[in-house]
Image (cartoon, rainbow, N blue to C red):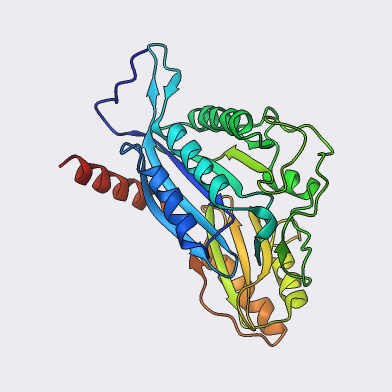
Length: 310
């Protein structure tokens, strides 16, 4: 099949690759080197959090279709799998610890459509990458959202696998404590888990805004209560998911996923957290985004890819 790049760059997909490491610079550099093997896929942002011991790479490339309009190729597939391979080689989950929950070394891979691309194309790529990771690295992979046959939500999968339960000091995650044989069959890969690699979840969904609100308190139980009241699950703001996490000394965060930023934006979240924290006598700092907007990501990709070709 002809895999030539289309003349325009309007069919773009974005991969957010979450890896359980941010304190080992040589591991992060090895993962970035793997990404540079294919110049057609571009890292537009790397976001590290040392307290969480977690990094997210935001990578963008195009998708090519066959004569019937079906997606057949994207440089993102090769790049994402190469980065995952580098992560598995450089990181051991058994020696990892941090203040953010995780299921595996390559913890979460989500694909978003950008520009004129569709969610179906993002789901096609998610399933292709899941098959590669499951078979090549013998890692159990669970699909979610548009990549899953029934659209299963990632928080449901995580809840079933014990993701949200800290296993160290009451508010940290360390090593691997789950059973080595999974209670249910993954979508790809084996039913047994390598303690060094863990599990990967892979999905496709419309754009999700990540927005974290710092609270100046070490009282995590109170921050958890605030986080729950902000979330849709706790009867708070619609299309908002939250976690309360320790973030450094004497501080915590309400980490938010805004599933529909047009329905509930960051200003509403910020105001709600401030109001609830004030009732507890706690100070709140201004929240922050952990990534660029989709429009800015497309712009940065176009600038970076044109610079590579000059």
